[in-house]
Image 1 (cartoon, protein in one colour):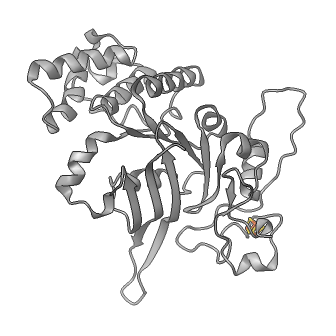
Image 2 (tube, rainbow, N blue to C red):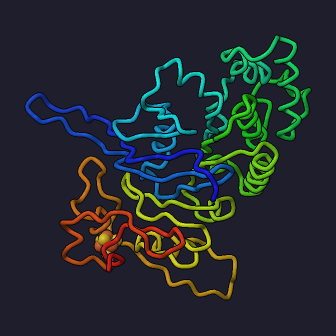
Length: 323
Ligand code: SF4
């Protein structure tokens, strides 16, 4: 059986809301008890609507923002218990690719300096060796080494994302959190970047957490998929099982709204009533009960936990599956 590279247990990230002096402190529970693991060499996709907590989950598990609670175990080490110095050493192995290739690259820095920066911070090699690594990594992501002398504004969106990928890859990480890496790109460019990520995964034995709101993109690249709603995982399953037989009503609704390539198909779209509730004051019980077409009385009071719905690693948090 494959070994887990990363285990996330009951991860929480609460953001305080500025309260008036006579009011009790309240919080937005952006991530509220998320548990899953990622096997070595695997791609786990995280999907959900905007504001469901998927990006915060990615950043919190990397400790780019400190978690409010829970544990993140990477190669047997509990990241939440490490000192700042120990965490800094591990950062080489845990990298992120950001969504917006325009905002994530400093416009005042040449590509060479953008790529040299992580090597210098971590004291990798001599100056000559570092410059050689920059040229090599630009070749690896499909840009020539001669691009190193240019500024980010001289590149297209797809090329900038290649530079962002090169920056995350140059320290030879084990795990990359790809946070909506193609959603700011034209559809024609998206597939090139997805193919590049898949080629790099094979070439460098990478493990990915791939975050996206786009179900078809996640289906293309992932081995297993987690669906988030209001800071919690509501379903987690192997890709084939989740897309063929979604168990949670929220996943069913998301999938019914996804475009289908077959013009003869007549999809039965499930229309959800209402908007996503306010995350600072989520509904009690199952947080989805205000929009769920199958809600029963128990859903208003009892919060369902993620439980197996089959013997093949398919989990859902829904009272309908508890029997
Ligand atoms: Fe719907 Fe109840 Fe299941 Fe929540 S627990 S998804 S409200 S049926």
